Structures are given as structure tokens and as C-alpha cells.
Length: 114
Length: 510
Image 1 (tube, chains in turn cyan, purple):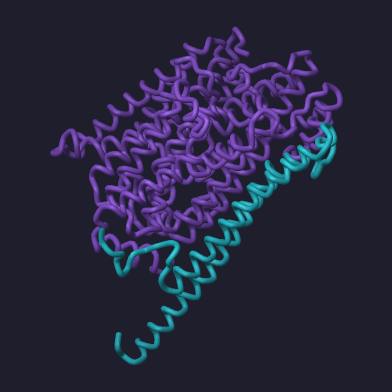
Image 2: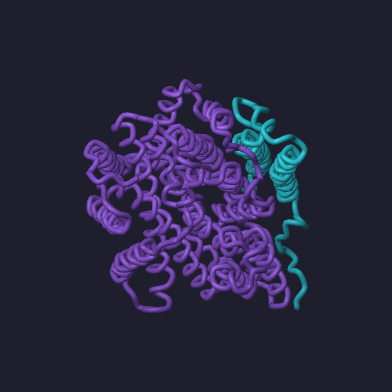
């Protein structure tokens, strides 16, 4: 067995600000993803087991019984929202990283070191 | 369901649509030459999304999903959640990183990351098996539609369908047809939603957004026929729902032909936003699919049919059954059939071509003929294309109680148990090595096929790892095996760890 390499990538021990920020965001998005799936099904399970048969299909949202809307319509929409949030955050940080790199380059360029 | 006569108008619509695809493909090919010179073949993020969605839409989505809703009601939502939620995993954990690796196929990625020819060959074999299983689901869908179009039985329809697939590939290949995936998605969405709008309109429901309008049909079924379609968790346990849902998610993030979309996009931002658009386009179909299942049930109830249909073939035809029993004009039914055939054809040709490319690129020159020239590889790919088509054809002819979506789910289970863990740890854990990934993928293969081989004699296997849902517990087991074996064996080379650290995780986006 050998020791962990000095530059080994590990999701749970991210190195550098870029990777640390990215893994934090990924953790948040995945938490939102998992909570929505487990939470919605727990709610559906509770509804089924605490409500009289027949009533459940009468409770509707957007014309659909609540369990159907929650699972079949809302969850895919929630996944799209999560993906949009992830992309916006990544775009902002990518622009910031790129800005930093360009400033660094122009400064070194003006000193005539490049 | 199969009529005894040829459906001439629908057949003409199907032929016309395929002719349109071929003509537009030829035009796209000639236009691309000039476009590449100025724009590098950039089609925009919406275009990438449409290509992702068109690549994804298969007979399982077009026919199978409605069939599952028809047969299982609420339980089938596991397919919708699984097949959309998997794109979140794909986006946040893999899409940008795969693009930075700069490899073109899943076996290529595995071979490069794990520095192992054995791992690469194993990944290629798994990719081929996934292609075959997924193709069987497509052939089944094609056969059901061809059976209705030509008024023939299932077995001859499978043979006719397979011949048409091979013929389509030969014609496309000879004419150098490029796949116009934006057009294909446009056709798919129109052919799927237009009949649904007309059905809702005929029934007096809210037809502008049929994805919500069909709720009235659920109420009608409940009030007029005492059929509780939407009551959740009546037939299946919560474990069955979750295991199927997560298997499909892990499988989505591990399917080779889905992953391959991200190797070729122009930039990392485009890859990311392409996923969002792709997911939206896929969701448009999945928000609509349950409506066909419910409407098929409603029309049957009004026609006096009992609610006890359990025949998988009848359920897989729920989309067509809703259109026919709903009294839609023949040209609309023709559009629906054309859309279903287009989805199945594009997927099956893509899968078999991917499988034959895996053979000719990853296996043939490395294991069978080390000195193979480029011409030899092309011949090997063509020959293996026919072999794969024949194997899928043979398997499609075998009677099975599985529905289209369930056969597809088996392919997802294999991908979720093998390719997904290999990519996940390959990207996010520098210590994962060749011994780990080989043991992991072999464990994944064992877990996937154990319920099919020994499920009846050892019931606990089927209980923990159901055939179509084995990756829920299987993928974590495979990850544990990969971690344990990697830690017990020497780490990967400094070069690949450094590449992973600097080129994949620390490089700025372009």
C-alpha cells in the first residue's frame, strides 16, 4: 500500500479555490436533487397512508392529482432549475477565473516579461 | 392490434419522413463543409440540446414510457424521474470533465485514465453488450409498429424491421448522409404532441397544454369507471420505486452513447448549457407520455374493455391504441407511427454503429489483428454491424414478458453498475487504478446478470438486485469494490494523476 500522492484529486478533499468552490456547489446541487426525490416520495407516501382512498385523486394541482404532478411534472422541472443554477454559478466563476488570468497576463505583458 | 391490411396512408407518411431525413442529411453534409470553415461547425446551445434530446429519444421514450403508465399508473413515474434526474448527475459530475479528457469513446476514456488495455477491452465489451440489449428494446418497438403498418404478425415484423434498419444505414452510408438531429427532434416533438392535442380537443379537455389537460381523464376514469389510475404505491413497494429510479439515473450517467455527446461539443460552456436544453426537450416528451397511457385506458373503458390487460405488447402499443380508439384521422396516426419509427431507427442505428466502432477500434486491432490497416478496420466495423444487428434480431424474436422500457432499463442497469462507477471514480478520485476498475466492472457485470441467471433459485438476489433495478444497490457495491481494490494495489502513474489534477480539475473553461 502506498501513501496518497501529493497532487491526488479527491472529491472530499478538494485542493485549490476553483476545485473547492466547484465541489461545494456540486454537493449543494446533489443535496437539492436527493432531497427533492426522497422528500417528494415521502410526502406521497404520507398522503397515501393518511388520506382516504378516492380523496387523493380529487386533490389536484394544475389539473393533475397531487402525487402525479409532484413526481411526474415538478421533479423534472426542479432538475432543470438545478442545472440552470449550476451553470450560472459555473459561468460566473469561469469568467472570474478568466478575468484573473487576463489581468495577470496583461500586467506581465506590460512589464515586458512575456 | 395488428390489422390484416397494409396501412397505405401512414406508410406513405413514414416513407416521406425518412426521405426527408435523407435529403436533409445530404444537404447538411454539403453545407457543413462551408460552415466548418467559418464557424467550426457551431450549432448553438439549443442545437446541442436538440441533438442530445434526439439522440436520447428512443422507442423506450416514445412508446415504452406510455406503455408503462398504461400498465402501472403512478409507479411508472420512476422512469420519468430516473431518465431526467440522471442528467443532473451527468452535468454536475461528468459533462465538463469528460470534455477536458479529450477522448472520443467510453473505452477510450477508461483505457487512457486507468492506463490499462484490459480495462479498455472490458469497457468495450460492456459497451457492445449495452448496445445489443438497448437495440433489442428498439427492435421490439420497430416490430410492433411495422406489424401494424403492414398488417403482419410480430415475428415477420421483427425481420422486416431489422432489414429496414440495415437498409437505412446502407443507404445513408452510401449517400454520405449526416444526421440532422435538430430536424429529427422537431419531427419527434410534433409527431408526439400534435396527436395528443387533437385527442384532448376531441374529448373537450384543455388541449393547448395536453401535459396538464389529461388530468380530466384521470378524474373521468375515477368517477365513471371507479378506476384509480393515479393512486401511488399500490402495486410496488417504495424500495421498488427508488431502486428503479436510481438505477435509471446511474445508467443515464453511464450510457456510452449518451456520454459520447460530450466529447465532441465545441466548448465546455456549450456542453453544460447543451445539457440544460437537452433536459428541457426531453422533459417536454416525458411530461406528455403519461397522457397517452391514461387516454388509452379511458378509450378502452368507454369501449367496454376490462382493466385487466397485462400483455406487455398490448401495453407497449398504448400510444397507437389511444390514437386509433380516439378516432384520429389516419394521417395523424401516420405521423405518430412515423415519429415512433424515427425515434427507434435513429437510436438503434446509433447504438449498433457505436457497438461496431467499439469492436473495430478497441478490440479488433488490439486482440484479433494487431497489424490491421485502416481499410481492415472499416471492413471489421461493417461486418460487426451486421453481426450485432443479427444478434439483436435473434434476441428480439425470443418471447419475453418484459416491456420495451423494462428491456431498456436492463441496459441502464448494466451501464449504472459498470461504466458509471468507472467514470465517477476516474474523474473524482486520483487514487483509482486499473486493478480497481477491472474488479469493479466485473462485479458490476455479475450484479447485473445474477438476478437473470440465479434470481429464481436464490430469491435474495432478485430481492436486493431486481433485474431492471440492480444499480441502486449495485453501483455503491461496485464503488466500494473499486475503492478497496485500488487501495490494496499500487497507485496509478504520476503522469495520469498530474493530468487529472491540472488538466481536468484546475484548467480554466474555454
